[in-house]
Length: 325
Image (tube, rainbow, N blue to C red):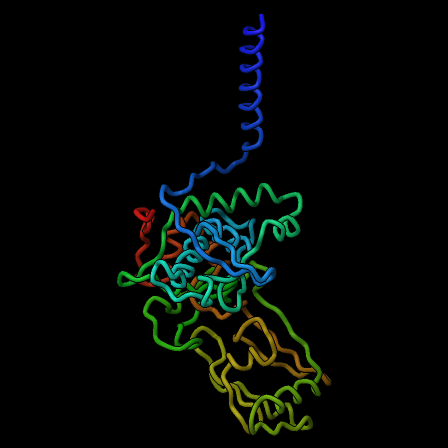
């Protein structure tokens, strides 16, 4: 009798677990297993001041969560995962990269690495959508295995940004060096996104003071402000190459940093005692546009097609480190 009870109890328990498992994982995204071989990285957490030893793709889940909206298309999220992984690989010591810090491969700061969010951060950010979004992004990351982007057999510098304003920028126009895979391309459909355009309004006094305090030899006079400001040249992308500020000239990139505006594709308008700086796009504009990637994904492109469009002449290598153990 006791033996019969144990058998019945075991069957009931097994069926309960099966039902619970089916309920918990009932999503529109199929679960994807980790690669057979795993790579671990040392990540310095800027908030806690501690080094975390993490599996590479677990780290990438936090990066994609911090860098791209979770409601974007799956193929766009996959493209972001591969770009983020490639960016990270260039810093991982065990893979021949240049570590972020002497004691860690990577860090959680977007200033020197990539934005990264912990589970705690994501619960606050996503609220009731946490489980759905987390599973979606994890699946996007693990569906791409250990794919990375190569050019001439080396991992590329996989730069990306939020919104290009319709055309990405040549690397040499923003950063140093002519990089063959970071060339300007047309990026369609970006005007549909909230981060496409913005305005920043500053007082004329603040505008003049900021320039005179930071631009050597400018000597700007508030009374002559309208005739003192002139955009001298633009790149083909529309971003400002040079701007004249009274007696000095600086790059559009420098002006963007000076006034903390979203993009170097800007116009300036004077309204009464205010200066209005209007921008198109969000970010430096080099490499993959995230809103452009999402638009391409909506049109039916897969993540490899997206990456091969924004990074010229590259190769996507499937599970590049599958043999590592």
